[in-house]
Length: 357
Image (cartoon, rainbow, N blue to C red; front, side):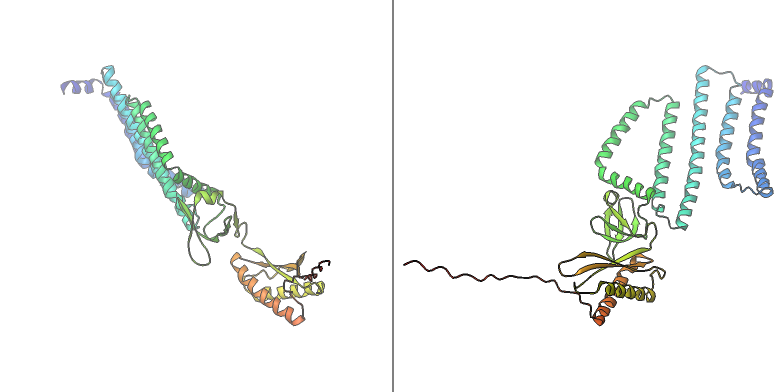
């Protein structure tokens, strides 16, 4: 104790300088900088968010105190081993402070981004929580490896063990990981989004309810849920009726007998299509319906009438109403929709020749 007092008395100038600088920097960080930022925010049109600065105050003070402590301690006469121990301890403290600061800033930023996505009902909100946890674990693991290296521990065998364990886990969870990364692809590329009406290659169709970690839930009109693994959805051919816009054409097929007047058929079909579009909700009133004759069928000349709806869910009721109205009008005008016909030729059997006498 006496030696320490004597050392401080004889070296107080060398000790006051680093300690004074350290204390001054901490005061600047705690008091001066926030006031300067507030003044700049009030005097200029530049908006400065103090949230991130407040997050960095504690780690920054920690770093300044660590540097000040190191600058103070090296003033003492000590062995090389003691200096090495002090250096390692302060390096570990510095690493912890930096990782702590990075984690605080990242978590606040990701929570802010998550809130923004939730306000606009973006489907990527389902993945933000998982991404935050993965990044936090990765940063903590990285800090552990750095600290282990600073303490002189050999981390090569540990990395090799982790690599082998990771390979074993990846092989065991191959299907789950495939669905997981397919979910990331669906989130980033957004071929489908919650609320979209889609039709899959396998014939399933309905509204996308949720894109989860493992599977996507699609609700068809019968109000059941179709659970589709993300990997299968990512590899499937998808018709998205809501992209790029929900407005779509409706094609209604019909056929008329061969003796029909095709000009009259076209005129009536277009007139009926206009009437249906004008009186029904969810149709494009400015769309001009069209009729296109397509083929000479077995019994009829087949044609398609093209209408326009503003939303894919309206196409079924529009098809329904148009078919009723067109059938009624064809009956009134005497236009025939022929039944399938086949011509059967019956051959008479010839009597067997009589035997010769």
